[in-house]
Image 1 (cartoon, protein in one colour):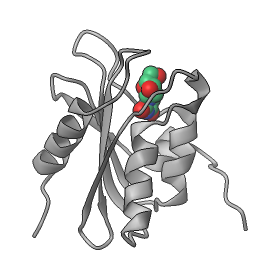
Image 2 (tube, rainbow, N blue to C red):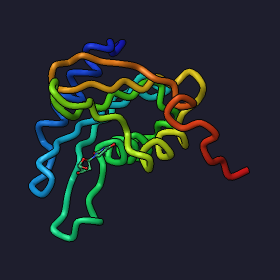
Image 3 (cartoon, rainbow, N blue to C red):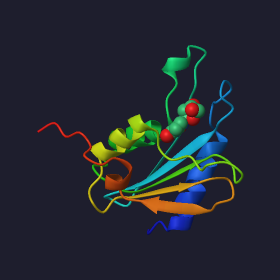
Length: 132
Ligand code: THU
């Protein structure tokens, strides 16, 4: 089964609905298509001890790894509102995505208006860290 960009975006929007973000009030959903064509989703999960909160991208990547995915082919991140800046991945999540990305990986960002933009990882994280 092929997952279209619309399906991917809808999956990120659906995941966003489940965000646990009582402290910031800022919900984020992420959806990944991996190298096997499988879909993985995540949402942000905050904590009363603020630094323990997790980003949506981290949750989706963890789900991908758990199920054997090796490469992010496309990732959609849904957050923010039409009258604010769409949620682009935070610095830490850029490095998280970089770990499982190649030069063809597409990163889609959109807000609740479903207007979207797409980036390559090199645009979001030039000279990302590699351990080799
Ligand atoms: N957040 C994400 O889930 N992903 C990002 O890339 C940026 C920020 C979450 C973390 C926190 O729960 C909320 O958005 C506000 O920062």
